[in-house]
Amino acid sequence: MVKKSKTQHKISLKKYLKELKTLHGELVALQRWVQQEGLKVCIIFEGRDGAGKGGTIKALTERVSPRVFRTIALPTPTEREKSQIYLQRYIPHLPAAGEVVIFDRSWYNRAGVERVMGFCTEEDTRKFLTIMPFFEKALIDSGIILLKYWLEIDMEEQERRLKNRIADPRKVWKLSPMDIESYRRWDDYSQARDDMLAATDTSWSPWFVADSNDKRTARLNIIRHILAQIPYRHLPVPEVHFPARKKNKSCRESKNSLRMVADHYGAPQGRGADTDGETAQTAQKAV
Image (cartoon, rainbow, N blue to C red; front, side, top):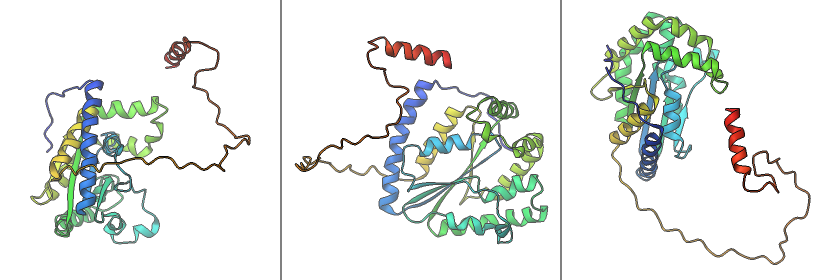
């Protein structure tokens, strides 16, 4: 059973952004170390719908290279994939040397959504949970650094976030019939979570549970935890000297008409110093 925290510390946006900037610098340092040392890192994020997996992954990856930090969010399996060995569709996405692969939901779908929604049998789930410790031991023995995170939220917070997806045009795409059904089956998901953690929390591949009722603190805590799990050093930053620009006397700026994108947000000409203030007031009214 996952322990619930009694209090949830709220962090101001100003402090959150300051802390996140510092952590982003550390992630860049980690990225350079991963590339130099040829590390293979695999990070799994699991949790209920609305737990904040996507936002955490975005905070983790927004300042690093997508060629090094690769995010994997697999769609519903095709008919061909359904006929394959279950783990077969995940194995090609595992990291090579110098990569950090992040799974937004992973092979643990079998222990969660597939089990609860009836997409697999109880026997399928039992077999999966039995073999996973050995599968993950094989990954670790091959040199992969495997980190598994479960994001935990309360029932009331999940409801608030799912309803917010309806009201916010930026998030309406996130709400699916599956989310509504998962909301109804809260207790079934709780049991599936507990069974999964009990069977696959091992000394070589433990689960780390993060309280994500407050998104900001959850993101900061998880990023700090990841940085603590992967030993790395700050590599010296090479000095860069910009050369003088090469002049080409035969080059002339084109006088051809260009199809310029309309500037809807720049200051209109001839409006004077009050333009920015008026624009800000207009934007505030729009919000």
